Length: 274
Image (cartoon, rainbow, N blue to C red; front, side, top):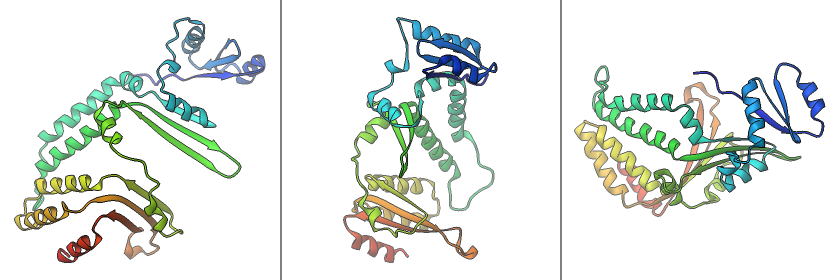
């Protein structure tokens, strides 16, 4: 239950000056051309022993080449060893999984007209369970910040087990320069884009709605819409947002662009169900 310890391994040309600058508040040990320091004496000493050991169980033996390259590109970089983190906090992670398992057995208080709340809870359990599984499928997360005379670049790299469900899902996608972003206004506060097979995501969203809606008329309209939307192929989405500046119009003003094979058919459907 204790907070995780922290230890720093820093190369230095003058270890004596480094030790003096750090003072007595930390434990400092020398290891060849590196200074090792921590507020945990045992941890600092173990790192020195690790450097001397012939059988090193180091990060270099486990980190993949792409994560290491991203780590080295940054002026300030962080690598999260996800399997080790899950092992260290396996009890807490197990508690979260157990709580999610109990979602389907929870009975929502009160009734929501037209909505099957039991089905909603069951679907939410499936979504959160998939998110937790995606966390388990990660082998590492790298964050790197680089500063140049013109830019500040933040790079994020997520390494997944290629044979995992999440890895196989993402492997099926292809990279894109997201050309839709070029058609958005240039003065927006922020932008976002998604390049994937949105048809599958929309189909899942419609299936979710069909499972939880109990109003027969609304369900009939939804099923009809679902059937007609299945013929459309959505391939990309991009959007931009600004502050509205008017209290009665909401906080944000947004514009979205979508790439699909038959915009005329979507336009006709929008008019039909408006």
